[in-house]
Image 1 (tube, helix red, strand yellow):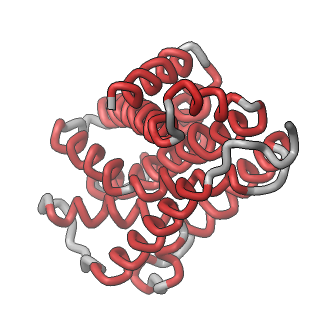
Image 2: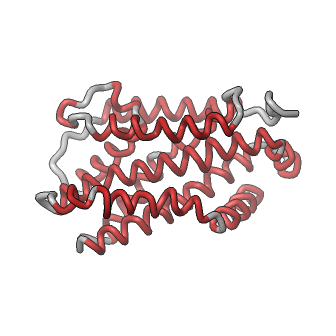
Length: 245
């Protein structure tokens, strides 16, 4: 446990010096919300509708953090040979795996707090209860964090898959946003953006904010699916790159 916290602390210190990460997970979503989608936010009929719309940005920030900070970062470490070096120092790959996850969960929470605080203060809907809901959403989304290690299992160079995955994020995100939630299908719960959005929305129901049918069965099945993928991905994570020796 000490090795896990030590590695995650080192990783977090390095991450905080990377301005690109903050631009991608905080500045970019704020730009979309306050500039590109300002008309949508201004036209919302109630504060609750605005919160529902903000939940999509939560999903984007969480997925972006897990994709780049866990999936692609672990692939880079593996490709460069650092994953093997760190594992030899730690004595096992699991302190490294949990350290990466812990770092990115902390970074996701920090990014979400900054984003949510700025947006809700501008529209005068800030509440600490909302931040608690945000924390619950992040922790329930944890299976996706471990599932992101599946990217490191792909037998392709990180430089190639990085661009492709970040480009694919947008159509997948747009598909999730444009689905009619009143007629949401079972398979749509396997879209990670929809999965996180539904978690936020259902937590809002439990908090007494929304009137929405809580879909326990599809949410539980998709949670179990991502959990199994995460377990297999972290278990099968090889220390040696098949592309570089």
